[in-house]
Image (cartoon, rainbow, N blue to C red; front, top):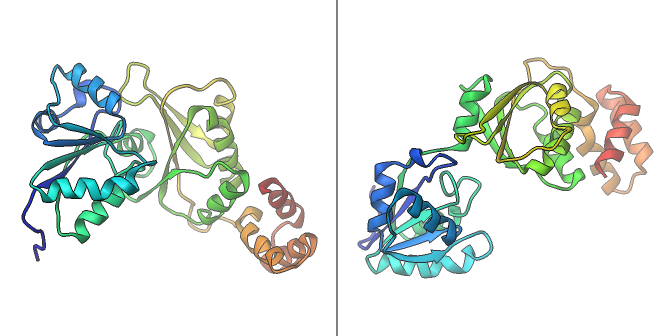
Length: 281
């Protein structure tokens, strides 16, 4: 049932992730015709328009993770007043690991029309180039920066059969790949896609151990990491059970006793489990 109310509309539009030639004619058209443009970085939007040889006559509004909560009411008021609101992120499709989800959720709840202009996606481009299974996959965004939180998240993904896709900052790629290797093992296949669609595009494929060796130098550029899912019947690792140890410790049990209890019940190495828990702290 169509529950939209009369008024304007919100258009989510994908922008190039590197190569300006990937800007679609529909993107160019909406940039020139939208009444209001909510951009993650208005300066980058202006730079994009200049690169495309066009101007953006609509009202520009900064819309990013630090202000999106208090921008939503203002933006919806614009749309309810009949405006066409264009929402763009710095690169790729807004909402996907970028601002926009909260606005779309509020718009749907209010019966406001929302549509999209598809286009470049770092997630799908990296997956297609990775050489890893693409029939089933999961996008995990950025892993937590703190070692313990990151280990916990990866522990939750131990049994994930689907190909996993992550974003990461170039200066943290080495630490991330080390955490992935610790969680999934040396031999798990993966790919690092760097500077997609740009002049120096590079895709490095291999085991996590091989990719970690590659990342030990300086890494630059936008990064997407694609990791093969767990194999059917893959043996459990000690790191699979860190959350169980942490839960027992939270309930008051001594760390060594908690490790011994979990190692015995799950039949994993007590030494490896203890080392993993300490590393995650």
